[in-house]
Length: 284
Length: 223
Image 1 (cartoon, helix red, strand yellow):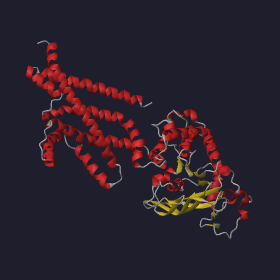
Image 2: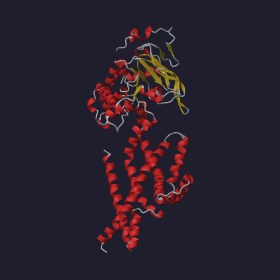
Image 3: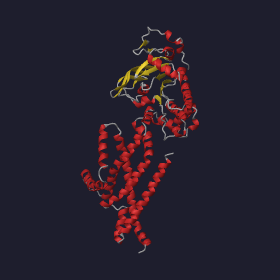
Image 4: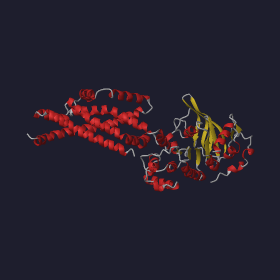
């Protein structure tokens, strides 16, 4: 399912309706709009999220909405807080101020059943984090059986179908150490998908891969995006972003600097910081 | 009396002693690792009310001699049993108290090994398990502890070999383990020195064989 709404902004920044209350230039000179969403239904709603490690503030007033079917790329220089931001979405990192709603459920609320919420949001990590003591098949079935309560037969069937989708069904009886990095990451994606999540979070999924293996992982992610999965990706792969994303969030030093549609971002990101970042990344 | 006749006559007593040694060893290992794992989890829990008692326990029992703990339990266990139940402990008091003493003592040592093992598993594994929706119990039992034990197996086995040698201390409270059986027989036959040396040789051979086995195991898992 292609994102058809981006066609409205084909001429980039020039069509911006500055009377729209959701469109403005923020304190950093960055562009914030509400354009380019795939859908009207909000899946992830972050409002004024702030986080401190002791006295050091790592996230400041981060506000972002991820709609159903959106592919949001979160980019920015090292230390900007992008990984931290994405880890607050499923509660792996706590936060002290603000609110995050996933499908209407508040992540920060102490009464929320966090394991249940996490089982509905898939996450893929930079270092794959497959369970080394389990076979590939068991990696995919252990959470299905123990967390979702599926029967072993159903879980195995589902696991094999997702392994097939990422092209690795023959590897099912092997152990993670026997697979290459690219294969392990594809298994990790299949593992997250086998839980049938409402959204997928990617934390620099290709950063730890040798260059020749990056594309096989990106191909899986591109196909996932084309099928309409709601995705939030922290990545440096701007090629992937320009191809498949419909929204870009640019972060710097714990702040969301740019938060707009992909076309708006690439056509004319306003802030100095975003422009400096883009010039460095796109030229290498 | 010739050597073979002597050994043939002594054999049942020695075997009984070895069986006792192995019984004490087995129970101490199971109880020690079980309690040790609980202590390790308490220390890593992040809850001060659990961390502090566990830390005090481990530091205390690693700072006192095993002989002292054995004697303390030998006198204390029947008394505590009487206070709780009002009855006299009719079981083999010495055996029960020494098993409890070993479990309690070894748990402190095993808990340090298990704690190191758990901490050596990177936080990424915990994140991955939690991201899939596993709770604390599932994360520990399905993902972290299996990996930690595989990693710590050589160290745990080494601790077991030390424990095997430590079982000889039950001599002090009259439990007939292999060493005491050899000692008593030797005293009886006026062959004390040969029997002590012989018993020493048995412990040596078993411990050495086990140590070599552990080293082989370590090499196998180093890939």
